[in-house]
Image 1 (tube, rainbow, N blue to C red):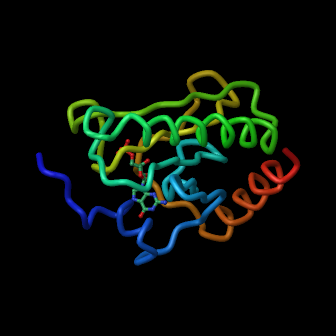
Image 2 (image 1 turned 90 degrees about the vertical axis):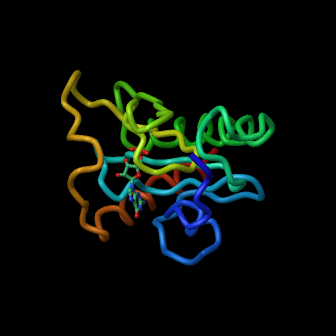
Length: 141
Ligand code: 5GP
């Protein structure tokens, strides 16, 4: 499948549609998942076009992983999460629904108690409050 330059994450990178940001640098963007599977569910994307892990330049994957590590630490601290999972899906069969490479950072509070994937939109005010907690944890180092 050819990369669709109008997928929602590409449009966020270009600033065409809003997202609740927690971090941005020259190569990556991190923001709250609009349908979180747990409080604090955050997404990290490289800014370059790439549908999945196979199609994205390795240096961009490396930048996204560096941001994922940094943001995961902040999410863990901000939510005092006893567990945390990082996932990344390749292909609709694997569960991918947005075809621009992204890493999910999902805190785990109770084993097996996640909400369903990409199902229920969160209150934007709650997402902003969660993002503020993560930004504060990032700022604290
Ligand atoms: P995938 O299913 O491709 O691994 O993950 C895509 C994720 O993007 C899902 O968890 C879904 O909730 C999230 N998502 C879908 N549309 C939007 C949107 O417009 N904004 C944000 N912030 N997240 C979205």
